[in-house]
Image 1 (cartoon, rainbow, N blue to C red):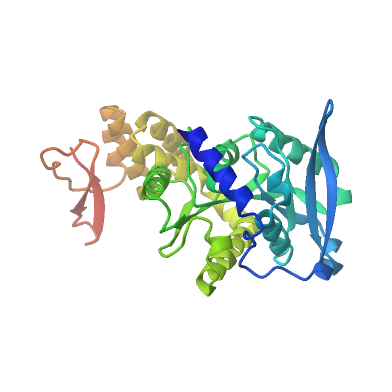
Image 2 (image 1 turned 135 degrees about the vertical axis):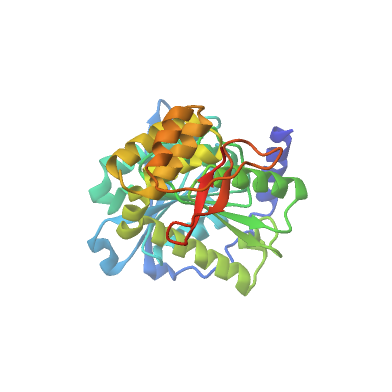
Length: 347
């Protein structure tokens, strides 16, 4: 079924290629340069990329890279007006833009070859190979999202997924992802996207959902209006913010605790307890972290340790969970100590 959908999408893209120009303004040809480069040679097979760079003073420093992911394993994604439009527009926002060819069934492997090439030729290409932003849309998301969520690909600092989704076996807590939902897409597609995003949010992943209620599938090339352009502009703002040093520092400073909280939310209390143990060791007087550790221990059925941890948080009044609620449910209870509301663990 999935193969059939991809075939239909490819046919649609091929037939409408001349129409699929980005509705967002792209810079004038004099504002950027374009180089065609072979980034991978395997026997008789050569894979090419097109590198777009802003002209002028921007090249005085290494630029972050905005990569248009090719999950179809074909060459048309490198030269399609849609891909080229995004890459050219990226140069107006301080990025180097890249479109590329891939081989069917080897898109992730080819992506790794691309990143390796960028690392080896960073100085000549004027790029920062450790600051990649990856965008994928439609059927490309099926391969694109699992690729960027692989924790081995640390060069990818942010990702954008347009009107597409797929299940992933794991999420990265150090990877901000923007999902853009086209409200007029097929109901089944949006229902699946909603489930995927909800699962990621439940795991406490740094994911953001931007919904375009009147947007069609492919709105960035088909819906020529100011709202489409504003969403594309917001996409570039997200990319710029996500790779900023201050943003990355704040993100990484909270990684351990975000992961621990995500483990609690998904019911992995053993993992949560292990993570919170290290956190509490570094912050032994922090009542909020101690409480979270106690919750994790209770969920892991380590009740004696949980009581010992809870005793360190002060005078907490607890009450039993309502019928049908799990023992580990957090309940609001009022502590008379200091007259402040506190969260307490159900006994």
